[in-house]
Image (cartoon, one colour):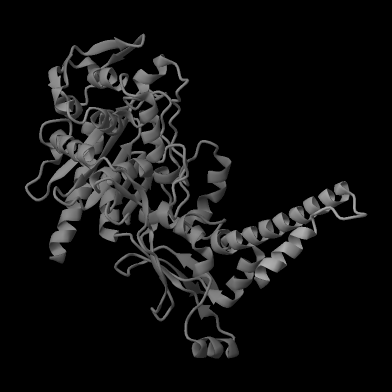
Length: 491
């Protein structure tokens, strides 16, 4: 009753009283309301800054607080998942120098800490310049005017798999990324052309003065490409969802080319696949079959599926990821659909995003957040902060996803990725040959190993090389082989 009287008293302030004009009362009410909203807005901003933005702002290399930390703390190490050093600070001739033992191999994902910062060196800048060793040691170092060791970042990266991916990509321009679909842990991430972070200072001026240079670009996260036939995974999934009980009845006779919505579409090198079921059209990557079924899809449902799979959205990740683009709307011209449903047109994807879509398919409809950071630990190896796997997307169409996984497997046993057949592991996936502005197409492969429980997703793009089956699949094979050898050695 007491609380009720308080509220009645407050409310009465805004009621007109004898001798108080109604207009004055209204102005007073809106003024109070504005002040209250402003107050709560400031509280909301402060909470967001402390929880979301503070670490990013502090980690900014231009933040003066960071410069002060460098005077007190030796920058922490960046370590692989098994504890090998990927980056560390050494003192030589009285000066500190950042050293990268693997040179070019981890260049883009680990990044650099001089001439600005990139990669994990940038994202975890503040953590690496923060020390959580025991207070007694900190005090002793302070008295003796010695710097304290910064915290170490333990990553999810596997050096053996990383080196295998680096060697497999060889001299091609492109990218390779390997992810555990069940956890989202990134085990390898390679981009080429590359650079040696140990000698970056020697070529820095040449890089920044060359407008055509892209050696600093991490193609996995910042590159956008037409996905080509790898996009047929999404087209096929939507078709199966809409025809869950009748997709087995799909039949098509491929003659090498067709015209749909006044757009001429042909299969790669105008190959004639003949009579095909849906499984066969997928395994053979038949453009004419997929443009025919794709243009009959429910447009709104296709748009919604792309939205759920994070097209046109920011992907939460330890590294910043460029948004993939899907331009079809309900108002788009019918002539825009034929190229879109086979991964051409205005659709663009990053290799990391393509890998995540495959992770979602392999992981029974659940896409996990891509992780590069396992934990932060003090110099004495005490864990300061641990990073947990987190779900990003969940699709409910488990029966449709199961059917798609069988089609991915058939692509390896009977289709365009037969080079992945192995006596040691079971592989599944999709090839892609993406036309672009240059003469030769981009070669794609995205797929996984492990039949009952997919264990590793690999996505490969080799720029301007040719067919995915010819150029991307052999690269993926070498990564899968390295994964199997590593797993076998552990056992």
